[in-house]
Image 1 (tube, helix red, strand yellow):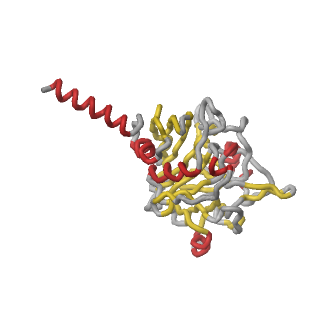
Image 2 (tube, helix red, strand yellow):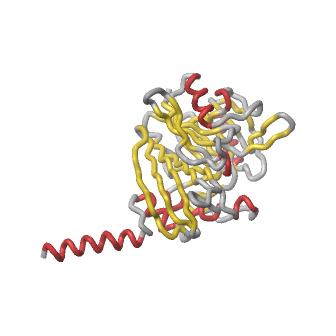
Length: 301
């Protein structure tokens, strides 16, 4: 009886791995099941980075190519919130670009305790000025209120600490109650369902590094996703259509694509032997690209 029981449990475990393409964590099992072009999961592990921040680190085969992804699950029920960042921690954008590591360092110098950071909105240049693609609010200050190409959705934190993704008209109705806001590219998930519509172009249809984010139905959990790319032997990148299914599988109720490519960066706080900020992924630009703004997980004031 003991032998039969052991055999049954062993087979059940193997069947479970086969069903989920080799994934071991609940997060990657759900993602692998929801994204058809993920063929197998070679590695997925989870760990608590700080109180309220859980990291999933995964290596998988996607469209026959190696792919590396980091997911940060941020629980806003803890003593943390999400703020926008800008070069030199100023409530302005356009004068200069700065890496996400440098933006975290300047925010620390300004009195914030920064745990995690990612790159933000895409941007363009007009003369000597850098222009974010979408809306940008920092520390309750409306810095840019116009939208650019395909930037008509906004991720924002309200003054009550809840996280949201909304269209520009929806955002404008509650703009006076917004603490932080950033624009992006395509809407990936709307009300729990993969959006399924996007402009067909090289950016959406080709494999690129990606940074995107999602929000839970109760508006108390935020997901930061970083996928490395343009490094064929290590990580090839992802297409927008599969990012939608990935976010749906991860449990996002709303999700939004932000700037990717060489801008894709995730950094974490390291306190020993001295305070620093370490890049967690492998940006395709080496060294990491300076960007116009970002998002930071910080200690609540």
